[in-house]
Image 1: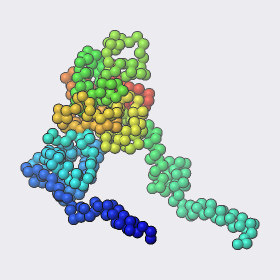
Image 2: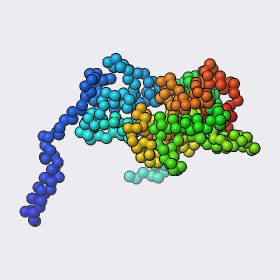
Image 3: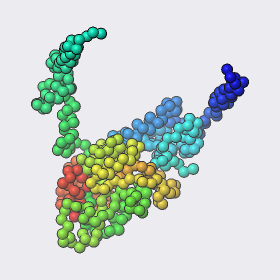
Length: 123
Length: 293
């Protein structure tokens, strides 16, 4: 091979450069997000593990039930009545969007467009 | 390799015949299994002694298209607006518009091209294009009529919407799901009443919505690129309250809101006692908003 002295180190440098993000971040998962949970409430509408996985599906279901079928059934939690609403129910306990929603959404790099229309609590 | 042209044509001809003939034979053997056959029987005889399950789709689609009968089941919310009472008190109409737009966080864009309106005032000529305009009386000439989405029983906007973002809900209210709206504006073209407005700009940039802490915190805003319109206060009505405009005009009973399908409701009583007109009735949309003129 001609110029192998240049080509092989060049290739090695190229591979190292391309795989830089992999070996540089190896073994570091980043700080696990710690969303701030409401202090005054112990219980959510659905168990936490389930909520963590499928809160977006629940919100979609609520939306369709309220808007389309008019099923606005209120639910009772720890003696207080709540409606099916992100803006008017979820955010009543989870008072901070920054300390609750954003922590995980930023970590997993998702940007739902809820707050383009819905009003996040004033912080 | 040395197939003759003549032999090739023979084989090709036979296979073509077999290919065309086979489905027909199979259909004959399994009666009604082909949708073509099933539809043919229902078309000929609507009683349909063919395969009932298969022929179901055809008459259902048919019924929707003609839909001459107004189904009397369930609720159908409507409104009666007494125009004369608003003529006597034009400030009340303004108050209605203001209250509605405040409670629904409707952006205030002064430029008419990007204006958003849920309820507004317009001249008699514009509101009732099908009624005579010659030699109008003075108060009709001078004053405006309060107009809003008619929440038609046969809403053309719903038919036009390609994403089902706008739909008729269980209460007969023509509502919007802004999540689904793709901003195609077909519904705006379909609506004969101009009840729909498009958000050309971010509504939160409007002067009245800039400070989000001062707007109605119980109702969302909209985003750029969606169509919006009056929702008959579906959220309030769903909780058993009156729509905002009706609340403002409640003392004078200039706006009466209620269930048109309930023969004992107040709105039906008002309709029975007064001569009312609807906007553009000849279009067959059967509006749910009535006017006492």
